[in-house]
Image 1: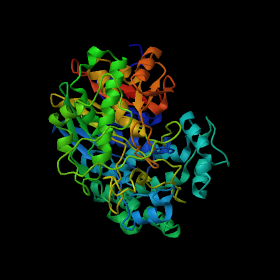
Image 2: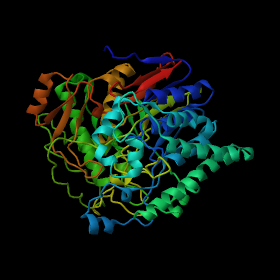
Image 3: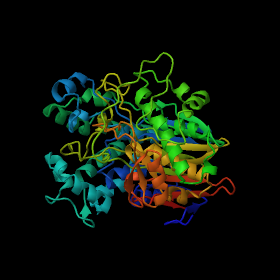
Image 4: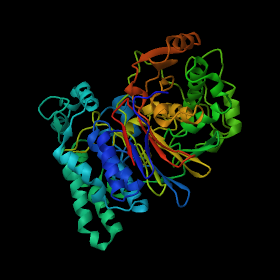
Length: 570
């Protein structure tokens, strides 16, 4: 398949990220001798500067790491918990069960702890070394790009709600224009403070320096400013909450598809949607259907609906709810669920979730939403592979328009609480100390116990849908990674959205216009409510991936042209 960009090929190391300057930041680290974790963290922190409309340094950063020497997968949740004072009753009594924009959505800012923990356990460089380029980009600025400029313009009224936000994102009293230099001096100062604290303790060893950088954020001046702002403005976050926060090491969800072992994040996120969908699809001859044929698209959409039905009924923080993940990922369960996929008709809405013995009936499905799907700001992604065969996969996130910038910090502490529910019947209901059910979900694939492909995407609920399609393009249809990423895409919205207000669009499907009109007509005849997407629609996700070519060992990097993604390697 001809591509807009070439597949980037290298023999030594490779990185692909959601912004070209973040890719460059990580590539510099690889060239300087750093490993995949060092490079991935450098790029991830840079994304929190270059795409700070959608990725915040104080947001979330789930990470998956492949350790070549051990053949081991490590998964760091990079996800914050609700403050101890958070109250479900408060949302019901004051807001009618809604979760309004603002600081009441705040969960613990997890990304700094996630980056630093990954560096400490599996990196080789200092925080100062990997954060240097991001700090420079924040202090000296970068040329405003169309993707961020459009978002700020579309959400100008939201940024105007809070003086701290307007000062950063409307620096001349208006949205920045494409090509203008965009600076974030307070954010640069916050990161530099952590770098300076690390340097002051470096004589005690690398670990002591990294701990000092962490303490600067969670116990020092930054924590003081966050807690003070919450205290002064009716928020729930305290110094105690921040000081006691720790990331969690999680066991990844796993399945095997066409000889490939696929590892995804667990049910504290939407990660299991990917392996559940692959399990359902394993019972079909997808290749015989033909790539993006009506039968193929219909089958994938119906499988995704079944997985999303289980997500709504069963997924939640396993520290608070019992999730029957072993059952959901079993072959027997997939075989029963697969029977619900009709070749001659689309499910008109969200199908019933699967029945697991000992679990109560599923929660009530929200009323259908009006209008077209309008998902919130999503996120970004980065993957890296080093000369030793280690791999890094991460989906850093958290937007800036629904949460105030804390004055003097340049930070919007994680608004990820918006991905919890206020309905107690739903496993992903909020509670003090609980993690929201996260949409960002990086993945990793192995073949014969060795690295095959780290991959992931932004896109809120579109993430596992885009990831599934790209994975199938590579594994079933034998596409080169760049062709797999660029191939026309589609997505269903026939489920309650992860994010407040949890909009539900029964039967709705969006299809990129590069898919032939005859295919769309047949999908419509099957009962899908098809809406159009542009030829390379940014809402369709932006997958980055690095495949290890099993024939020659070369690294093949792919980056989605739907956004600002780029790959670099040698």
